[in-house]
Image (cartoon, rainbow over all chains, first blue to last red; front, side, top):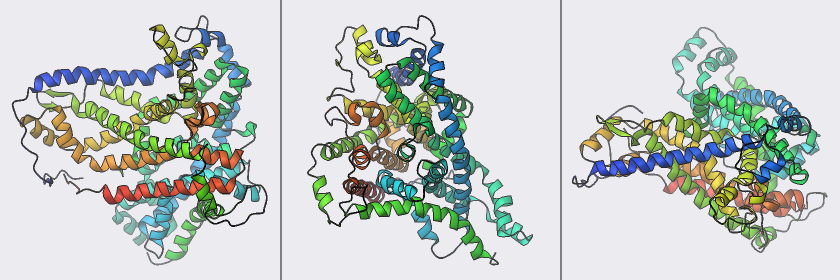
Length: 298
Length: 307
């Protein structure tokens, strides 16, 4: 979007009456909008801080004195969440899955996107639209057949199965986004590399991938957050509670605490699950915002 | 470039396309097929029964009809409220705090606000569900809102907001809006950043107030972004499930008051063992998503304003 000043409005807006009092309006609006901004900010901060406070309370305090501070911090809640609640195991499970699913998604996504963006061949458009269309499919429709397909090849309730599913369901957006990104890269460098005798593979791995780094980083962040938060697919495909990933593990914990009534441990588990995300968010806030909104802006 | 081009293309596409076809396209195609059978999902026996499942969908007033109604409500309310709030906040944070010597800038603390507003977007729905379930809990379970209302001597629903038919759906929608607004704030902000400042300055010189600036300059230039946001939010609205699963009594209750299409598909497929019926509802959802996209692309298009 160059800063060209040729504006093609549909029709010129009716001239506004200049007799308004912009200052008055400004002052009232200022108070109102500031108040509203702060109100929304508090609506985000208060529940989060409150759950952190609650995680240090006894179950009796949580129910009896929801607005008060904990009399003495209950570190037991955290111990219980970590050991009985298995939060530690869920973390490791999730990391195990994501090391492979993220690198797989990025590698396969970049390969497909690169070919679709830079090579002319029959069926190019068809493949592209098959991927892009997948962004709209409601995943509910596929759940049960997917369950059966994995069951038939013995990959139900296994991490390799879950990893492949994560990759497959992350591909539509990844391919869609990276195709657009590879198209924006200059052709001159690629041609020069080919003249210098680089093959197609070397061109991709040594020239194009490094050039596509900003796009790859943005979409990697997008996928990390998406797969970290994935709930529905593991819920259906991983039925052994021992193997649960973090979101699913928390949900199981929530369900169990409903019976056992140990709210403190549930909130401690929730806070434990929130902490790494929070730290990463504070550090990489700009990159995360850019990564998550990148696809929408393209 | 020509040498070895096709082997290269094939070698790069085979794996991603193969995996995608196997685990995404195939299950979707199978679901369409299943929807015309009477398959329960557990045995290998089934017969084709034509459109019977589809006809029966609209007779199921216990789950399907409430779910269609509720998903319909979410489909209208979620995009409208989220986009309105997102635009308002983005405008305030980028352009609204105006007129220090005619320079256009956001209100003070806008960076802080952006960081805070966006935070729910990185939390998983499981965490958000646990968080808000407790916020909405009944007073004697230590709910935040009920407790707060009590502290001011105001009445609150005895069993909390989520066990009350009148409030449960609105409560779920509120959480959806709460978690989505930050994303659209940032999204609209980046779109607003590409609007040249001199347009606003010209507007101010002509005596435009903030309302006029917004409706005459910002909104028309953001139209494409609003359209994109609307499609995204509609798809989110159609796929609502996790929050209902995590927060509401009976995963859709009380009394069907928060059943959603995704949840009902899940119930029929995985707890009632009525696979074919669930697939039929899934197909309906599929076409709903498809027609939304087509409608918004066909009719939402306006002349593109270049700047």
